[in-house]
Image 1 (cartoon, rainbow, N blue to C red):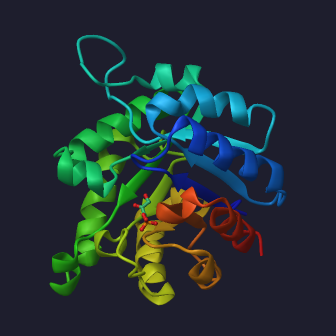
Image 2 (image 1 turned 180 degrees about the vertical axis):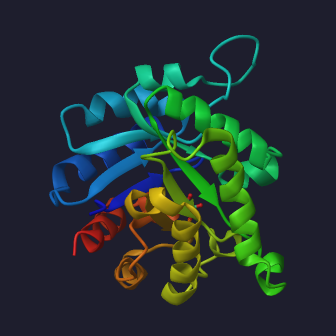
Length: 246
Ligand code: 13P
């Protein structure tokens, strides 16, 4: 039995006052216990979010972490630092980081190992571009991205990892993979994970909204969502969480 997980990736959005209002609404209105909910604000707001989420059932995550534990890495945050601010989850390998920060499969795998070694839960993002989908390469791309992590971390160490399938063409575009398109990829990832697959939560991300969440969550291998834009609107994010509970 995999507990559904709905994670809000705020990306580079928010302000002290917007975060206060959003988190107050989320913590006062979230009730469904059968779903895990988490938010991932920008790193500078983790202390604020940690204080506002203390004692609530909404968990905290970060949007990235360094593969290094400390040292001369300007601009980076270590996993231990994120842990001090109450993070349970760390998103890694988001397509925006792969694209704008040239993160390779190997680097994502190294980050995954560092996060697992600290006892936090990595949310490893994978996804194909539109050109790759149109060229029939979707499953090969996903397989390569997942395999890099499997090879580097090892399947025993990977237990508890979360995978997020986010087709790049569906991120922030209003285009969503159909439930069947997403299910096909999720099933392939689960199969690739072999024995680990049955217990691994695989989230879908890419224009998840209150209006399409239910049909996505109805698919056998979709265990929740990684939500961008809609996670910034309390009512929408709560509705997605509620859809995951059904
Ligand atoms: P949107 O929900 O805004 O499409 O973003 C998805 C995403 O990239 C979550 O990590």
